[in-house]
Image 1 (cartoon, rainbow, N blue to C red):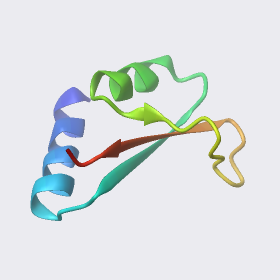
Image 2 (image 1 turned 30 degrees about the vertical axis):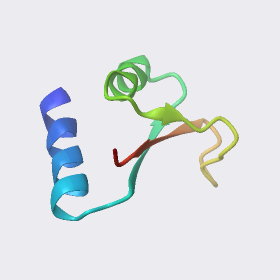
Image 3 (image 1 turned 135 degrees about the vertical axis):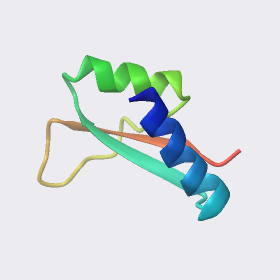
Image 4 (image 1 turned 90 degrees about the horizontal axis):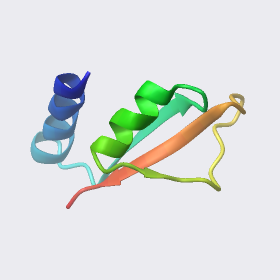
Length: 63
């Protein structure tokens, strides 16, 4: 999954020129949360995924 996320970040930031990328994951998915933290995504604790109350939202801003 690290390779896949690296590719997503490369395309999103370097080819599409996105300002930020969001990731949504279930609050109990420790593997996904660990991966997002490894890639410097920041938890957005006050944001809610409407209709999916068990999800967390992470964001990574373009450097």
